[in-house]
Length: 246
Image (cartoon, rainbow, N blue to C red; front, side, top):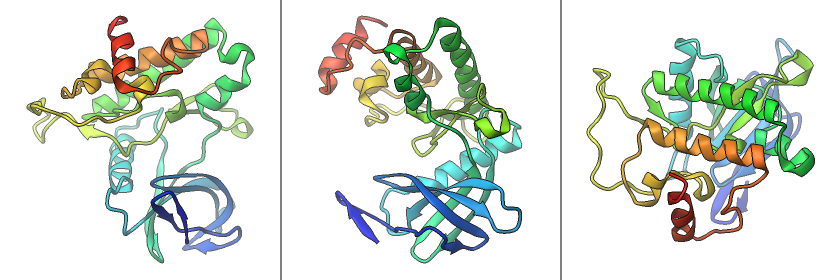
């Protein structure tokens, strides 16, 4: 186990076996846990495993698993398949479909850090379909951005397919009767400042159109190479500039 900032992460080693999953390599890590490439010891097929400490005060894996399973039941084509869940030592894990690079990583590899118009339009259509699939099962994403979308794996000819990822910040906007929930009078900030909708900046309850607003900012960035407020980190300054666009 090691510490990143104020967060403790359980470090798995290459070759370690977690139930039926063998650790192949570390893909990334952050405040809430780590992501590994794993191999099913029975089939030898590759998957992604996301981990989270049981002691974590804010747990996101539970929401991720619930959303993925609902989307899988609804046969969503832009949301990865939840393959397995469980616990190991002092952490929880979820195993899901392995995908390729994030749109953010791919964009930064392109000339001018932007896609061609045709590619941007194709990505825009598929990412919008992904958001619609999430909304159809009653959830808002609340953190739409290029790093939360990924292309498929080139070795299985899915380079042109786009997947929506990371559902830890999702919130249900419908009740058990599929009616729109009453909005809260004040809502805390959720998401990433650069792509956050105006409603988020002014602490207003978000709804489906706010995911679309973040999608619009994403489209501007991948088409032009940057947003007008890319160098700003202060919420109020970003809010001021983004309000001129909405």
